[in-house]
Length: 68
Image 1 (cartoon, rainbow, N blue to C red):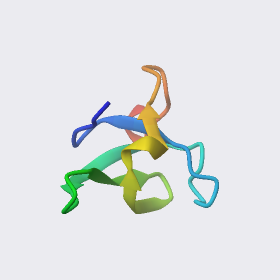
Image 2: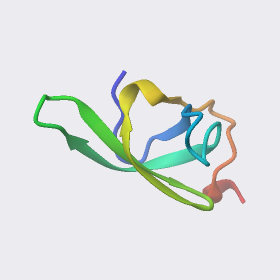
Image 3: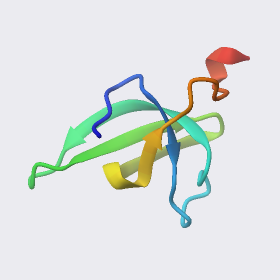
Image 4: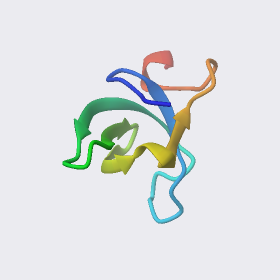
């Protein structure tokens, strides 16, 4: 599944301080190999260079900054 700017996602990366958090895709880039990488904005910061296999669509009722 590919994601677009503005999509709400959950990060699954045990090496990230944002593991398990809900964030918003702020930029989508394509590598020279044709794979998408993402920059995701979280409440406490952002994470860049995230591969598609490390994120999943957030549930519709997931809390984001816009909900507060």
